[in-house]
Each structure stands twice: as C-alpha cells, then as structure tokens.
Image (tube, rainbow, N blue to C red; front, side, top):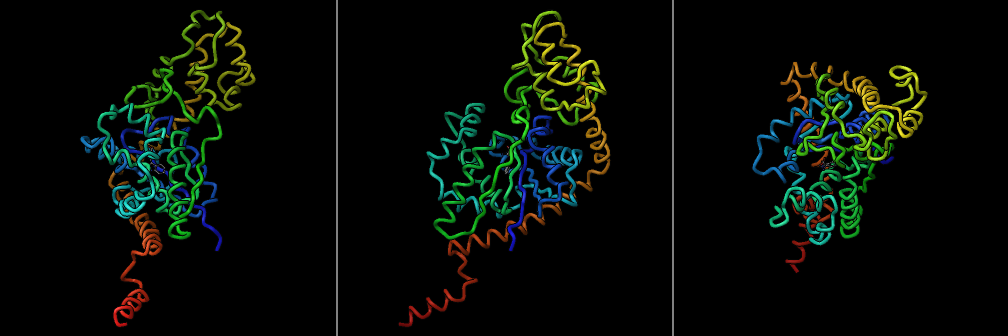
Length: 363
Ligand code: TRP
C-alpha cells in the first residue's frame, strides 16, 4: 500500500491570528490544501496546549476558538478538504501522551530551546507547571495520532518536531514499527521564517502589542504600518538608510511580488532597486510604508471581507468544528489501537493471549 500523505498542524487559541502566523504557516497550508497532493489534512485548534500556560484563563481560550476558526476559514482553509478540530475533544491524545512520557527524559525536555525561552518569557523559572513542561510530548501525540507525514509550521516549532521524531524512533525501536516519523515543512522565504513585530522586536506577539492581525480593519492596518519601526538613524530623507533589521523591508521581503511595482510604485523595477535607493539615501520611510500599505491591503483585504461573511453564521462554524472533531477522533482512535497492540496492552482483543495464559495455569 502506498504511504498516505497526511498533514497535521495547528495553533494555540490565545488570540486572533496575525500576519506572522499567516506568512509563517497559514498561507502555505492553504496552498498545500489546494495542491491536491495530500490524502488527508488535519488542522487543530490546540486549546489543551493553550491551557498549559493559561490555566487561570479558560475564558480566553474559550473565546478564541471561534476567532481562530474564523481566521482559518477567511484565509481559505476549506472544511470540505481539511478537517478542522479542537484538541481537547480528542481524549485519545491524552492517552498517547501518557505512554510517550516514558520515552522522554526530564533532561531532554529541559534542553528544548522553545520551552526554555517560553519558561523565561512567562517567568516560570521558579515553578514550572508539569503540564507546560511536558507539552512537547503532548505535541508528539498530536502529530503521531494522525499519522502525519508533513507538519507545516513556523521555525519556532522545529524543536517540537525533533522531539517527536525521537519519540517515534524510540517507540518503534522498543515496540516495533508502529508510528510514522513526520517531516517539518518550513516557509521557503527566509523573511517568513520569523516575521518580526511592528516594533522591530524579534517575535510578533500579542503580549508585546506589536501584532498586525489578519482581521485588522483597513484603517488600523495603515495606521500600524505608518508607525512601524524602520532605521532609527534614518532621520532625513537624503540620509542613507539601513535595510538590515528594518522591519518595513523585512515585511516587503515577505509580502512583495514583482507585479506590485507595476501596480503601486512603477518608478522602481524591483525590490532590489528600491532597497539600493534607500541605502544610498534620498528615499523617505513614508514612501516605502505607503507601498507596503498598498501591498498588504491587497493581500489582507479579501481575507477581511471573507471573515465578515463567515461571521454571519457562527452556529454553522461550531457545527463544522463538531464534525471535524468526530472525524479526528476516529483517526486518533485507530492509531491508539495500533499503539496499544504494539505495547501489549490490548488484553481483551487478544484471544491468543487468553488461551496461552489458560494453558500455562493448567500445566
Ligand atoms: N505549538 C503550536 C503553537 O504554539 C501548536 C501546536 C500544538 C501544534 N500541537 C501541534 C503545531 C502539532 C503543529 C503540530 O502554535
């Protein structure tokens, strides 16, 4: 049998999705979905993982389920092609995590760079919740439960995929070939690997207040672009400016395509020429920001409009999610059955075992 190509990926519902999610993963997912190359696609709203560092804020997680679902649909995730579901509704994932926990050492978890940074960011140093500390294991359960071969995510998720593959190899080594090793699929454009915040800080994050959301209004979008961080030493238009670390140019690297020049800035043939002029001096920040504003409106405008359409029938979206959970649960249950069999804890479906034991006691 040909190996199925399966995608699993997801996001924590801690806020609306922003353009970092979009260029880092979301846009790619839609392309992959529409390529027709995949047999199954699972997109998970990782509420249980969100609760690992939001224990005391269940309402936030609850409110954002629908926001994330709306963002998915607005971007073009199509529930007839992809299964959108909610992590907490798939109890099988907990059971898998419980078994995988025996395959990972505490020191290995401590070395996970993403977890390390998150511990610092959340001031967890003195008291790390066990659930949070072990979320990479639960993420391995998410991925393997769906027999995912491909996981399209942002660069920050690389350590999770490495950890997953270690778990898969260890499991298969001990219990026999059961789980599938997934491949990470990173954005191919370097600027999209980690889009900085509008303030130039390395990461776009809600807590830093430096996000541009997918659902941003047209006005708010332009306002945020106008106040973006550029080169702090580029004081007068005639001064030479720096491109490196200049957020406006990083965003252009992520969003600009050749045809945008014809449409919005035809005195330049391409991005390289625009950059060269900025570096030479004589090109003002405002002009570059206006160009970026036009490009981003072209990309985000249709998403915003589509979102408004979906917002008109919220109960239908919950219904779609519920169906997605049913499909996902079935897939995860299949894998769990394989895992139980391999781990020899499938006592009651193993007639041979019962016969063998009966015989042993008769002798
Ligand atoms: N860790 C991911 C994030 O923070 C969310 C996530 C949970 C995920 N489980 C996953 C992503 C499995 C990919 C695969 O956004």
